[in-house]
Image 1 (cartoon, one colour):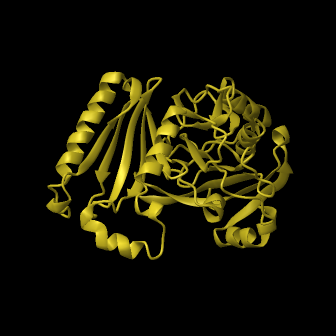
Image 2 (image 1 turned 90 degrees about the horizontal axis):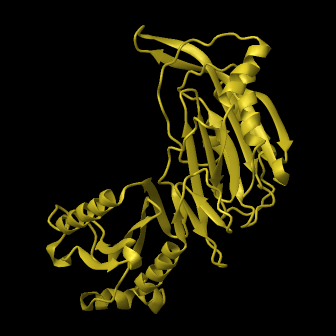
Image 3 (image 1 turned 180 degrees about the horizontal axis):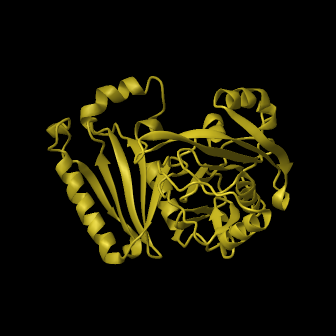
Length: 360
């Protein structure tokens, strides 16, 4: 997804593999291959959108979730494993004060341990390694519907008497509230936890809210920043989806960036396969599909071999994004991956994926 990387910073994995040679197939066989891939599909709820992917596709990225100032990661886990995770993490935090770079005067490393109601987990208020203890971190370990979540955010707290002088200097350029962000951040974190539930990615919640990997956050009627990334890594290519409701509508759309994109494609020896507008489920979108060649090293033969490379990208609601209909991009790329699919097959895979895009 070279164009995708060039235009927006996405958190998609880069994988290096070597695969068998590409076979030339008839049009009938091309369709048969793709029909087999899509014989069974499943919906995936991503942010405030839904797409259908082949049954064999599974999201591999579960820690690129940002809601307001909170970073979230998720993982399916049995209760005993979750309790063990908390125990080990607490031990690790308590012992960190003895590691190089941490001043004993900032002890204890864990300032507060807050138990969540109904045995859902715990919130640690702890120092940040290598920093004075006025700069700390809230770290929540939450267990709901068989999913373990870790939610983190940084806080600032000048309330200790030893920071009286630094607080006075800080107040010259800010407010009293900003000298201790813990109360507001903790309240926001507890609200977030109360609206969080675990789910399988193919489960589509009926309530209004945002889908995250393994989870769902119910709306509370307040505005929130939402950035969610999914990445489906196959043996043939990577398919990524990223939605960000902090982007507002702009005339600087994909097609309005044509000159710089064309220049970039020439610089990497790629060409445009096609670019077009589409509107699945009324979602205003623009797509740009490019192709070219790439060099992959055959480690056994100790030689470089040329293979096709594909970079397909879609941008939705670039010009008219609003919180309930946020900006979204998706892309397919096989950089450093040798795919057995032909160009026509890759385009057909792409068409089936993007045409399934719809609002949650």
